Amino acid sequence: MSDRICRAAALITAAALSGCSLAPTYRPPIVAAPAMFKEAGPWLPATPADTAPPEAWWTLFHDATLDGLERQLADANPTIAGAVGRYDAARAYLARARADLLPSVGVGTQLTQNRQSDNRPLRGSNQPDLYAADTVSGAAGYELDLWGRVRNNVAAGRAEAEASADDIAAIKLSLAGELASDYVALRGADQQIALLNNTVDDYAQADALTQRRFRGGIASGVDTGRSATQLSEAKAQLSDVTAGRTLIEHAIASLVGVPASNFSIAPAATTLAMPTIPTGLPSTLLERRPDVAAAERRMMAANAEIGVARAAFFPSLSLGGQGGFQSTGLAGLISAPNLFWSVGPSAVLSLFDGGRRRAQVALARADWTQATAAYRGNVLKAFQDVEDSLSQLHLVGEEAEAEQQAETQAAQVETLSLNRYVKGAVTYLDVVTAQETALRIHRSVIDLTTRRLQANVRLARAIGGGWQAQATAQMSAAPPAG
Image 1 (cartoon, rainbow, N blue to C red):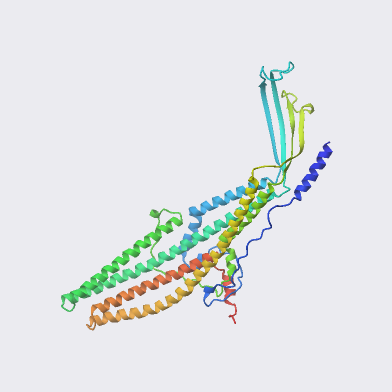
Image 2: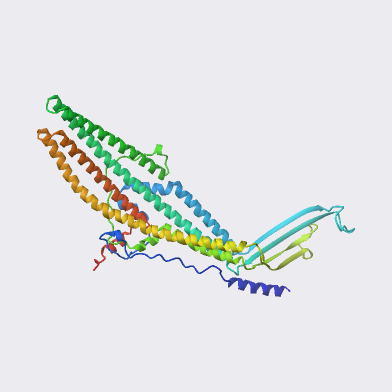
């Protein structure tokens, strides 16, 4: 008898090991990728040397303060900590799913004193009212994964865990980019403040000049009114920019996990280094974006869940057994006469469930449709992000060059008009007009430089974390088209 049971168990186990999977063949949707980006301006297509994202892409800006803030963000940001917690939960779910691949084994013991009812049914004269029941037993069970339910559960759990890891990378990339963009804006505000401080000093001197000329009967009250108005307006602009800088500093404090009240960044009217863009940005760089990778992993998990739902239409087969010793007393409990055991396979098949299993399959397919659409949406958004950043770099760069030329001309006009006013050749209206134009253009140049730097930040985020130096060198060596 025991030989037949062993042979049957061996055959069933072999069948389980060669069991099928009811999940559809995984085929992620194909999203056509351009060979190059249309907004790249004069840049050429090339093949990247390495698609792995650099660990610290923000070092392209060569700013030690930014480097320190980025490290602090990675260590203390609460959003990243929450993402790590979700990743740990996904790994725990995966471990729980993997446990179903192995047999379950348990042991137990029960030592009881019992009394039967005097009015129990079928009471016999030879049955004692009081008796002891002592049991030591063990049990083992194993589900035969003939239809791939367990394996697909594990595959789905593994894909979800990988997606959670990608989520951490995506959050880190997004927050690092947000911090870099805020820091660029902060330094832009510092330059604006330095410019406006100098402007207030210059306007104060010009106002003092008009006051002296007015007292000497050379200038009119209109001139003094214009100079005073101009000075007050410059002070108002200075206060406005200072208030904006304060808000940016508070935002950076929250990103790096520090209360805004305890955080400050010393002003520095310095310009960050403008990163050198490689001569080609191939669209394959987007393959390393963590949000795209996470969407693809969740699509794989949804595909595996279809197999789990389909398996419910087939019998659930298990091997199980239990055995132990049972007696009415502890003395001699572990002995052959007290031995009991049972072993054998079992099968369960639901014949009618009111459409529950069909609904579960439909739900799994709907989840697959959603995951597929989310993946396509992520890929299309990735292309848009790169095109947006490239267009800003290309067009804002041209605007900045033109504005810098205007800045030089405006500075010359401002100096010339003030000299001519001192000599009485022009009215103070000409001076005010020249100074206001020069200030507006100076501020515009700073603003454009800030926007170009922020466009570099967005481009680094859009392609998954900057560009490798090795890839940049190889791209730069690409031959011209045609």
